[in-house]
Length: 458
Image (cartoon, rainbow, N blue to C red):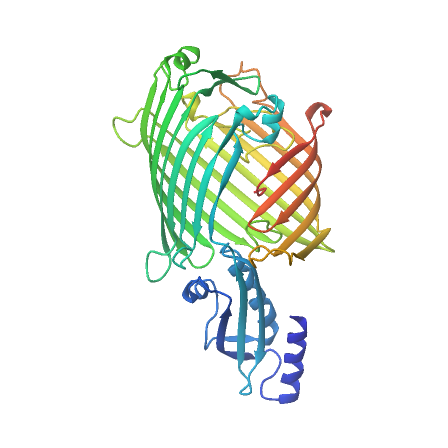
């Protein structure tokens, strides 16, 4: 890209038809490799079009910036860009891409516990695994739609169906997602004791759950998104669960039915959503659980998060995120309370801890060094979607701070205390959005260990 910029600059000086700092007109924009993806979907991501003008100074940066936006559609393994000056002095811009393999049917295997470390601490028994079949069809009409079907059994039996269409309107600003899920469990966590989930195991079904949701997402400009989701929840538990923990649904109930509505705002200005190195992201949401007179749940919760990513130079990068949640005061059923320790809301080093509470604060920081970033050629693999494997490795240093508020002051766990985790780690990034992490944290009291995780950090 620097070569193109240099030659273009020399051409301008010699040609004399436009001076440095002046604008050049875009004559054409070409896409190569989008065999399935419709071109208008790609053009939606660009912040320029034919007949627009770009200055010489911004030319390379703008073209590279838009290349990253095309990558963030998650439709491609890689996207390349170049441009050249036409005889009339105008520009021709080209984007070449390699599409992912959009139809995948594969065996599914996952652990029922919250993370790999939690599963290992419980004896790493494969009876606590969930397995089955997943069918994924991305971009099936060339418009970045997605259909997902999951049929799984084992520790939990579940069936999930979802359909996502990000472009309902001609302006390509309104999207919709429909989802339906059903699950049953014969091994159910019914309470938390000293930061650890306590399970009851049975030969009969202990828990059953139905959920259905419709979500609309509106895109404003390029980076602002607003979502509105309506969800229905139906859950049942065995009498034994209600006896062991009357607060599971509250008042010893064995059934919970309610609707909820959620509004969310997101500003996403990151270079690569899978593993960002530069940019920023803001998320704000408000959820009301129980909106109808007969709903058996009635409380609200609000969340806010801001993540910043900095290029420090010399292949060093810094990522920092602040995240918080507040909930309505008063009684909230055990089944609906989540503090730190679920999904990715945790202080690193506390992966084994479930810290219940209505409010929490979380600050995570990671310093990364790009040790390796390359593309491996795998000529013995016939399919082009798999024979080029991007690999990046980042040694990391991290420090996290967290706090969970629990109104029950007598709770014997890590709530109502400041939690600190720091340590070293390695991140491994490759194609199809796979991010693997190995960490060696030190937490309060000097406890150490090793943690393994899969998925993006924040």
